Image 1 (tube, rainbow, N blue to C red):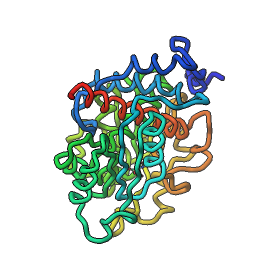
Image 2 (image 1 turned 90 degrees about the horizontal axis):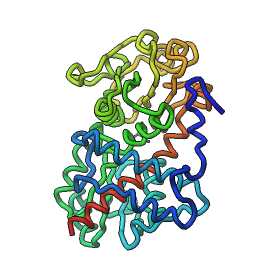
Image 3 (image 1 turned 90 degrees about the vertical axis):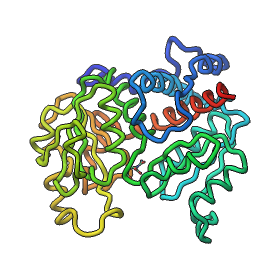
Image 4 (image 1 turned 135 degrees about the vertical axis):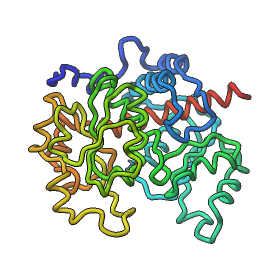
Length: 345
Ligand code: NCD
């Protein structure tokens, strides 16, 4: 199947690419591609160089083939322990990290505040220090406070991966978005990407702006003034408060969830009003480029920021690809951090 851009067939790439062995040889082929991450932790994409980001994406791209095989197990993290510490609810990010760790052969433990001593008053740092004494190698953390992952990384001896801290960063989301874009368009450089909606509360928007700029895309933020962070004029992106105008010529429209749980007070007059001006429907999308692709990090509020017909259209929506690429990107980052640890020992 070939789409308007002639590249949609990449979405149905064969199980193993021609340059890669399949079956039992795939493990040695993948092992030869492991990238040693330049830092001990992944707290954000800020500070990630273009060449390191591309090396990570190349490695993740190779892992997509593994995830499409019947036998998805590799031994790159055999003997390693990974702890998922999620203080905020999550479906796709937590299960994606869990699958990534397990497919690489690690022992994976899931912790959540509901089942940990946090409910008995233990602090974030105490919990982390206790877990650290059990000698994990990789600690994946999600927390409602910006800066939580960085704080933890200073208190533990293992590698820390930020799975979302407040409205600060969500680095693996930006990396999986970049991988989805690369597979859909061939390259991220030069793409016109509109990020639309609740930018104010979005760590996904922050990480994406940084990484897309590093990779050479043109970024435009679209949303009502009440949902734009102060200081956005210093982000080096275009800003539009009119979606019909802002979306013109876009190659990519990345929708953000209206984060009602983080809003105290009225940021939008009503959800119906919001959809009328900022919801993605066919009428607004018609103004974008003919090769446009639509993205959403999930979870989606259908009928609030995006119309179901658009979200579910396989010709234009990359939303399921994003979920698939999430596992590959997380496998890549876990294996790359573990390789760095090995090299440092
Ligand atoms: C995002 C998050 O938690 O930051 N979701 C995700 O990781 N898939 C975006 C959101 O919650 O809207």
